Amino acid sequence: MKTATLYNLYQQHFLVDTDTRNIRKNTIFFALKGDNFNGNTFAEQALKLGASYAVVDEKEFQTNDRILLVTNVLKALQELANFHRKQLHIPIIGLTGSNGKTTTKELIHVVLSKKLNTVATKGNLNNHIGVPLTLLSMTDKTELGIVEMGANHQKEIEFLCTICEPDFGYVTNFGKAHLEGFGGIEGVIKGKSELYTFLKANQKTTFVNADDAIQVKKTKGVKAVSFTTEAIKFLEVNPFVKLSYGNTTIQSNLIGKYNFTNIAAAIAMGTYFKISETAIKEAIESYVPANNRSQILTTKHNTIILDAYNANPSSMQVALENFDTLKAPSKVVILGDMFELGKESVHEHQVIVDVATAFNFDEIYFVGENFNIAKTNKPQFKTYQAFEDFLKKNPLKNSSILIKGSRGMRLERILEFIG
Image (tube, rainbow, N blue to C red; front, side):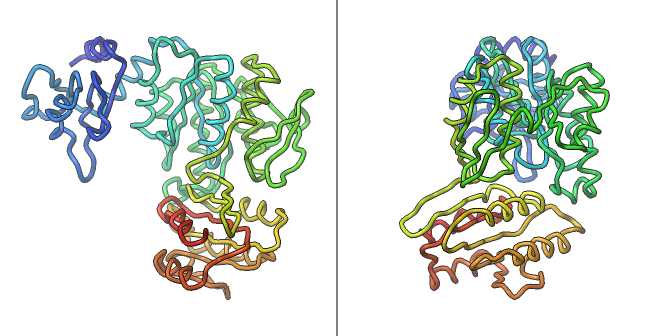
């Protein structure tokens, strides 16, 4: 089936789904495949649940005229998304980086939504499936799109750019994330800079943190809109970031000085798209992080900084540095393993152990197989369950507690035992 023909069907309702557990009425169901499932087998079920059409790539499942056969379902989804992007005729901001992508994306979204009908990536649907779904969630009423792009290998950002064709770009930073797939920090820089390569080749524009020497170097020859700490000034963090620009002071709900740059980027884009200072202030001050990202939770016995959505050596270190600056009578640190570090894993976990123990925290606990083999005199727990069992017998009270680890560690489970 030709993309243009499929697009005519999509235009009837502008709805696309890939999971029958969340199917919507009148949607087009794309029967994607995974390592442990074959979406083709759910095509008929999708129609029964309300889908208008189902797209499959195995002929035996094309059992009626509302089940459409293509050569490859994933490729059909990606081509449909790109075809739709070309019809939208709206500016799209492409966003990537090692740390802070989702928070920055959400900040940009709340700021630009003050003036424009803006659609942004939901959650972290930022891969070869999530990017097409984000584009296909935009309609003729959308005035601007924000597409988060994630990657853990070379050429992924390059490919995602060919789907979403961004008019603007922003790289939050280059950090020690996905070192295994990228092949080290230089590989990270090269991989994330594929966004800059696309923007330069297509004479598009990037936003640049002019205080970041690597970003400045990598954007040479690219049309750029720069922002600096001279124009957007950091004031304090206690525990939330406070900053100023123009005649405006902004008190955010984001902890950690590392979030200052994320806020500054949103301000720079708001200014570029002519959002008023008052509206930018209102937007940023209204934003409250969720989904285990730098959340501050006040319980009966403790104050908790929950930053358990993701972790890598770069984000782990700045989280520890920030926690050290906070004023609290008792500070407890709970760190879980960092994943996808490859051959650097042993070294990077030891570095974080050394950094954490160098601070004067009252208690430090290391959780996971990688932290368990590091050298330290602090308590180590090979499994989450072992740490949970310890907490049940040794409850934490009257403390400020930092919880940080990779998503796979699911350290938010600890909350039940440290209330």
